[in-house]
Length: 330
Image: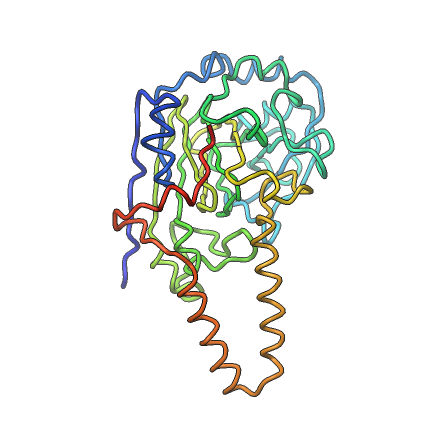
């Protein structure tokens, strides 16, 4: 049986803005940045401290009886809790108070004040905690999109998906495993929108997903205080090895008008890509008007034109993309 290639995400120490922009960012590959100053949050953000700072404000959280949370099939429920109660429950393995079962898992992804319009911003939703967190200054402030506060129960695994903006995942407390897949392996990931249908990346159902083994698996374990650079379009799957707190900082990789202005989560395809996909759907509907052998012939011609038109690079060949294709963040 074909074995999936496994690649360790490289670890860099002593990274400042200059090193990041010159040596890491242009390669468009994941990288763990160790030793970057995240501020006093690494020492301060205990369960007691978080509960005291967050007080009794209410938060909307995911609650799941399953360790692998599945967004496509919605095997979780949304519930509202006071923040201090949520932190306490998320830090426990067994609960005296619960919604679904005594070993249910909890997950918080912070939202903007108006979740339908406004991106999350740690400085607005949790200003007392934001004072403890030093946002890495690796990009110009005008490219900032959101800072997402995340808290997860130990053992909880989140679905594989991609984001359309670059981001830094700061693992403030606890340890987390992250598995990533290159955008060039998208055809092997069985996509439904921006998410993979393969829920269990460690023991996939190869009868349903036989090509999944063709996708190279990048993996790292984040220690408290680590940063993970996740370039736009890279798929990622996270597993909380311990109760943990983190902050995702997203910034615009493309010009601002390249994104959907009504997207507060940063996961809608860029506007040009959305138009292209809509055009493709119209083209496929037009092909449906032809007999089967004509659809096959003209479908192959379309694929050939796409292959010739799109510049593609093998991520593992050592070939680098022309710098003119990308806009630096700072």
